Image (cartoon, rainbow, N blue to C red; front, side, top):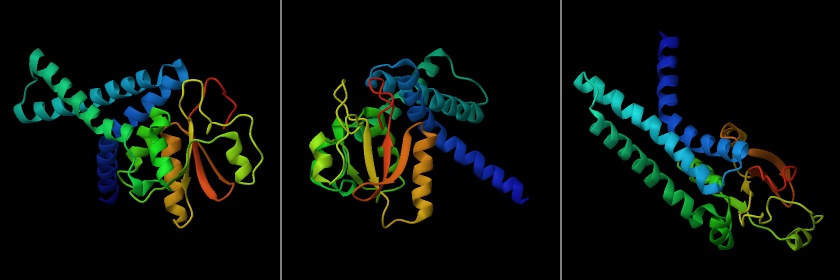
Length: 216
């Protein structure tokens, strides 16, 4: 009985999170494997996520009516699924709440982050509304101001395409379990993570840069 209940809960969770995994993990895959332009990778993830919702919509329609829809209905249901994904994604790609940024400068720099990083962090913000981004874009002299050795290569620097490929997230003042789940989320979604201490304990999250594949 307990095993059956746990299985049902697991199945529901998979159904709920699968569209988000396909959206983000799909975009990361296209970026890493095919070096597509950021917005093309995002679009690919959106198309895949919409396909998952399309299957859900038509499954429910079939259960309710006992039949499959015609070609026109199938086209409309996919269009609706794609619109849902776009409407969900756009705010997270364009906006960061001031409450989720350590200071206003980071909020202003949010759109300089790689778009896949943006959609990744905006999705986790749905569940973790107290998450704080402590750093994003840096210049070489910023490391000196923090009393650290200047790095020749850093994914906090703007890359050739004009985007920053790394961000830091606050972990102090949060439970160990919460921080471990956060790190696990980013790993599952395909991002690189590193827990380290510079000026403060934080979680460093980055995405592969094809220009500097060994940079972190």
